[in-house]
Image 1 (cartoon, rainbow, N blue to C red):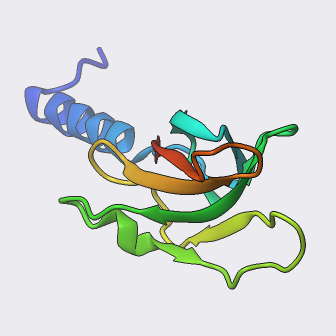
Image 2: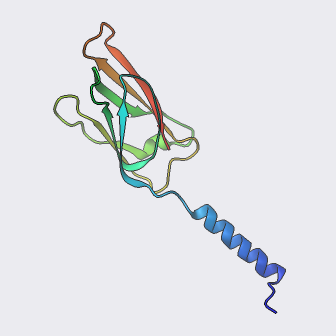
Image 3: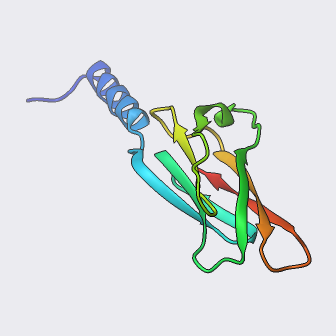
Length: 129
């Protein structure tokens, strides 16, 4: 009558479980992360190319962006491109993996320099998942 044996059901459940575990998020080709002069940059989706730039109208210049060391070594999968030339150029990284960062993600920090403040340095951080 078409009933599955216990063994067939277990094999089917195992196959479904493996398929569910194997399905991963699609990594987008690009993502732009806009940064404020100071503060928490929040959480952003990973992409093959990630561009960090200052929000329009910001009174500061982006000096540096980098990833912090983490227990899963996510930081090793972000390769910084050579800096662009021009006024306040963005900082661009290429992500070298085919699956999202492990654990909580990859934490980044950034440093800014104010263009019109007595406090010349600012910055913040965020996460790429």
